Picture 1 (spheres, rainbow, N blue to C red):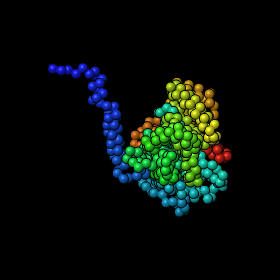
Picture 2: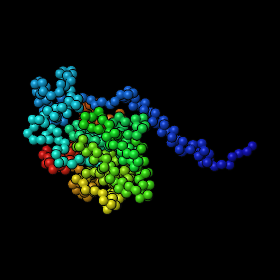
Picture 3: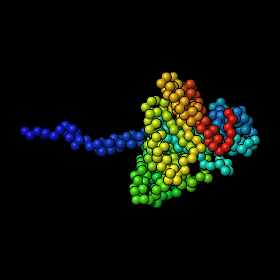
Picture 4: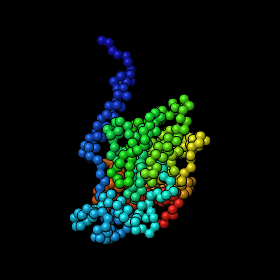
Length: 406
């Protein structure tokens, strides 16, 4: 009886080709994610944002709940939904209508509508980190949503082929973007489309999105070929050029960059007016960030020498997934503050089970009601988020030359 002399490893290779195995796993995972989405949101349904209590609406507007009640009794402003015990609930559109109403009687412009005025430039904020797991996408999503709730007109752009930011906003790329629809369509070298053709509305008033998927990788593949042929040596202007097409329509653009320093990230950084670097305060993460900063400096220096605009309104490091009771983390935070001073945001994004639990259902903390968590857990996480986002909004106002008093 003949016996095969092939090594066991060769037999395994024939039995389970890695490309086939990975493909099978991807297909199974995609089907399961789709089933999960359909369980959360029925087929063809769009995500909708909850209504906010009168207390939440008042806090967003910077007024007293009693004042909103007075407006309601006087018949001024939108009609809220009245629930049990006379509780008033306002939709995001209602809150925006109240902003517009209150702005007409405000003593100073921008009190309730804080966005751009004549002469203010578009703020383009890139959220970056070379290492995954730093909370980059979570930071970008909560920042975009909070700015929208606060009355800014926001365009969010998912530049990460993994498209987690898109998933948080109701887009599953392999099902929803079969025929394109990412920023790649607008910045590609052959037959680009107008940016407005790939902008989608979200369920947040004032927040639009350009979702992402694997098509974004095409820009990384095509750019070196174009450069080798001596064409499009100004690849780094492509993101900025398409943003100029919609510049009058927005106050802010927030870009969630991929965790790599490729051509797409460099083009995004060239378009940016501000840079937010997320950092998990662990030694390995800080070491990784050091390499990222060295690479960024070298590559963007080349871009600057080629004529790229490297001027910024501000750059800040945001401490993420921070645990105040963790001694080594506190040491690392102190180390960063001693090194970078004011370039480290005063507030940190705390590690929170509330934010993690929200992510399980592809939502952010701004989308969920307080009743779904223990009070202390929710309030601690929300205070952290709001403190960070308010500090960033103050930087935005400062870039427009406005003093902020708090």
